[in-house]
Image (cartoon, rainbow, N blue to C red; front, side, top):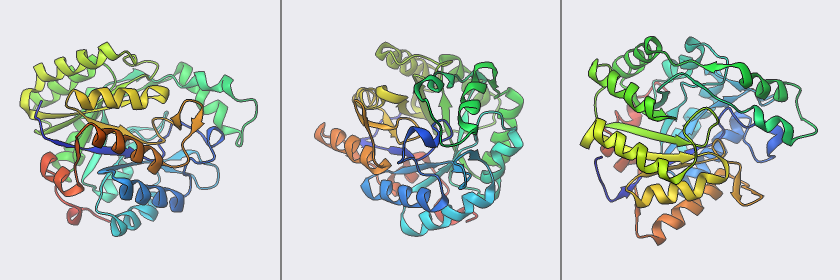
Length: 311
């Protein structure tokens, strides 16, 4: 693993897992997403990871027009690296998933590194009433749904967005096999270092939120990628802050945001993404870590620069 004194904070501001019923603070409209992203950047987020939602009902959408309602605003008001999803939402086709990134050609995109069960149906039983009818059905559908990321689609996305548009990837690895999938893609010449490897813990269907697994994933990535990668950590729900703190102490970068957890503390909803960024930044700085600026992250990850995007 390549080491630097600078810690990159990624903030994932809305995602496609949580639904409007779950928190009144989840940003839905383009205006809310833009405001949350700007506030997170001002709080210290280096990279802003972005999804879009239907402004009428909060359902995840990959409509490129909606992304272009907030991307220019965020770019104008911050220097943050903007990172677009290619995961989209459960049930979308690969073409639907990459449409916003194909249009906007951002500096970074996420790329999920393997097909998997992605079980979010467990949240259905936590709520008696829903703001929108689509919510429980959307969650329940994950009981019998594979989130597909085949080698054919991985090759297509890496060549279309990486080689074709100069995008770098946040390689999302939900299990050890996903690290080996990435190593295979590297061997095929589909992507080049440095790699930004995001290890993800606590999603049903992926590796569990057990602190021993942090070491397992890091050792495996060290073996496969040596000095060619930068490690980052995220964990779902209540595991978010403990995991990223431990991961940072092991030399990793961190990801927070309402996509990954709606909470700021036990039983306490985060009122904004900036709340989570502020908290993790305080923890890191009290541990004597320095927070990377966006331009430092661009240098570390060898990004193409905001001026070379299409928005």
